[in-house]
Length: 558
Image (cartoon, rainbow, N blue to C red; front, side):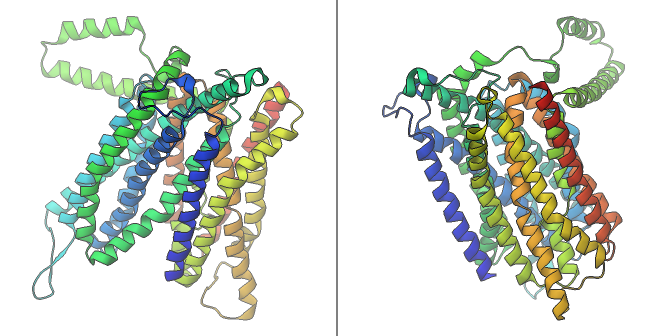
């Protein structure tokens, strides 16, 4: 375990250096705003404001990752020797995202130019994490004199668990809302401003991208945000673990986590307000068009009919309340169906669906694979070393992918098409690499269903090397495609549709997570894990085929 901490710390330092270098290079050609007054969008993005964007996103993801890992520790302490409550908590969060993310996306689409949706998501997440942390501290057992543990019992224990599950759902939904606005709405706007600043710097030698063109630097900004996500994913669980070990109390860990939320929320609100006032507001208001069907705006005649119904029936008591509630439920179901139908009809649906299938796979060194490897008697040191190497590959992919996109753009013969052909090419390469690396891994799981990691026989060493080597090297593929798919959505989806589209994509992402958990419950033994591996490989193959089909359509339209 000390080696794991050393690798994580060094990786985190590299990520910090990369982010600082990214800020310097990204704003080197821009005008520096040395005055304390607000800058207009035409002045370009200064280093100060770019760091503010990175810091705000990093704090949001840091709190998300910290609570995500801390909740696992809290659940294990409150409900030892069972995984039922932990599974229910995880399934509840993903189910809430699947059911309500499209509705939230439609609502956010009508207000994406305002600052309060992002700030509202921050406030809701801070409050939900604070209350949940206090709730977990009251639910976990407390050691008293005599070595006995005192714990909430009786009817209050399931009631508290239900409240904590609801708070977890709120935390998940607020994270979805924040990410779809910042990553799919704000980043393209900031990238376009950067291009406009380069036009001023270079004169007439560069053309300003329009709303439907691809800013050539968007993949750089996306990659920087992905590095921040990886840094928080890497360091936050380690920090929570160190805090729990240092305090020797999960109660103290929960209290510290709760007390840090107001401070972090205040900093995030200030930083998001800074970015919005200087850049997002003027630029987005000027470019956004009337909301489309994905945004789910109500027609005027519908509003008039609704108002007349309320005026006519407001005195009918319980019957009227039941009618209104039924009408609201039916409208919600219709809006949910409409969101998915509009999503599937969109021209960017295939690459998005290919991305949403990724969580269905267990062929990655995450929780599901780790649980199988431990059950198959693999040592924790081997798994930890492989996970550390996998994280290093993930970070490397955020550096290699922008370089590959830039190289493909420079070699492209069709310069007028922008970055889109290069993005598609890099995406196909990424998924092809993932399939190539996972093919021997899947074959090994099928050929050796009773694999035992504790077996020290010589002929088993190459088998273990194939499994770990393939899983680690394959990580270059999904992270490359994640960056590519994000930019495809940012470019191919209209600004008025982007938030709603991304919310449906997130809901499908969570549906794939739910399907993976159900698949693991059906094939729960180590001997039947080979079928899980085979289905996972089939899901990645389907993603590759969908992207290939979309690339062919794009080539025919060119």
